[in-house]
Length: 166
Figure 1 (tube, rainbow, N blue to C red):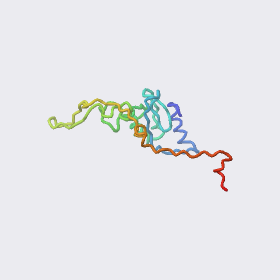
Figure 2: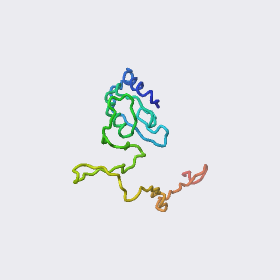
Figure 3: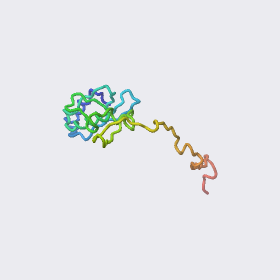
Figure 4: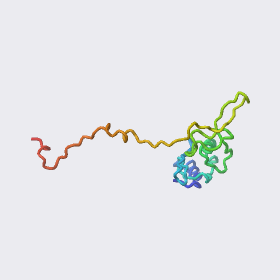
């Protein structure tokens, strides 16, 4: 576990030290765990919250540029001193960060092409039914009669005549 302030020094050490020789960055991503105070986690593990900026790794690895833009766009993790931190996968006017657990599955707006105005229009999402939470049991809990019965093996005591072959 690395403190957010130590990510860039650790990446620099891994790149420059002769025993490590991490010459390239293959990926940089995040995980959203909203039950934690520091809800985001990365591969070189550093737990941060949504208000804590993380120093950009672009000065260490140029490949971090688009990876950090993706993490910013999808999760909302802010990278301080990033040369071009803007959305990369979603539209410029997009609200929210879709890989967060608190982002609604249906989104906030629906996009469609309107023949009358000859352009794409954004409308609020209208659901025929509000979201419901299904707290269902698994089939193994619902149908206990269909479980395979466990066959009890006979317990043999020391000196039991049935355990000795004659």
